[in-house]
Length: 65
Picture 1 (cartoon, rainbow, N blue to C red):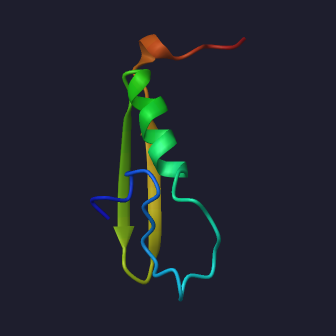
Picture 2: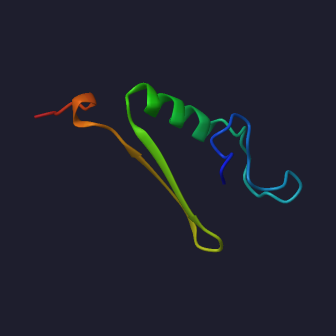
């Protein structure tokens, strides 16, 4: 998982994975989050799943009424 935010990185073997993708989603999410002074956090448990959390400082958020 340490390299999963690198562009074109995928965790599953190309011959065995069941989902398609380019490996750009998390790389883009991390870059855009960091541009807004945010943090992308990844927690993963083998056999259970993966959780990705994006956190932004309040100064970078918009409050809608």
